[in-house]
Length: 438
Image (cartoon, helix red, strand yellow):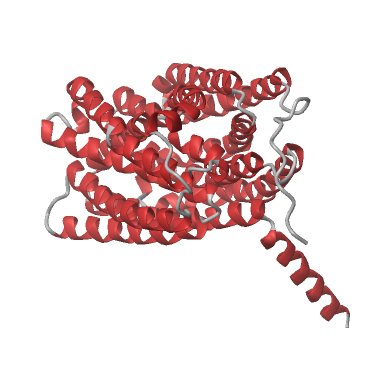
């Protein structure tokens, strides 16, 4: 009888959690990234086993560069969609304009940056030729468009579609890298091509899902008026986002330039487990901003749910990463385990602080505190790049320790910024919704 009662209670509690948009959306996104991380782990394992170490190290730096280029090409649009798509009367038109802007204006900007700065990047990146730079630029544009699509699906509470399109794209990426390796294409360009194929498949499926999730607009709005409505938010968010992504994208390039491709490969593989841990706060913060923007619940209520969701999952995951991560590196090879174990453990521990900074960013964006968002992202980027740059000549373990210190200081600053911007004292007022019949 007691067992039956307990099971009934557990089922009821699980049902309540699943019916809550905050928990459901965060859980589905986390499931999506968990599956992708597993496939991504296999991708890096294949690369480490079938490609030269120098190629793996160079591709890890290219991956960071692609992330930065994708942030440039996205034009700050993903956060704009998560903040406004669910409440905009011209939602389908806004989504279409966002995708087109990222693919055209953002893509052009991305390619210009590649042409101007590509020849000056380290030679070990193997993108000295114009053709290789074009491939990397296309990969960045695909990543930017994919980020815009994901943001639209999150805003529409269609996170299940993200799982489908990302899973198919990742399997395509995995198949491509195997085929290319079997064909003898074991260069950096082969890894870039495989990633591009997977990203392209995911983008096509995502576009179909986003269109289906949006109802036809009642009446078209002039494009200038539509874009002008969201210009201030997008511009402020764009600048802060580009600056905020600098640590994750520039540090791999710094490791390559200062320590060389071999150490860059060790750092890239050691970063895979900590990067996986960060998907917990990253996915939850996206849903936090989208749900807080809807206004169905107070910011405090949504934030409390987000904090519980993040640290109930993150705390045991960090402990597991610290204990098991070093042994996991042995799968890549004993040299990876010897060089990267301590680095991995320090990066795992830094996830405690990094998780909090994700939530702080989401709270500031949900209340349109663009200056505060810019300050915290600029400060975090400066702290990480300066501290890691000073420590890196002593090795990748010292760099990981510097990363930990910088992220901890960023949390302290973020709490101060939240107090100064008054997000709790002055919640954003929203027009009252019409009462539902009955």
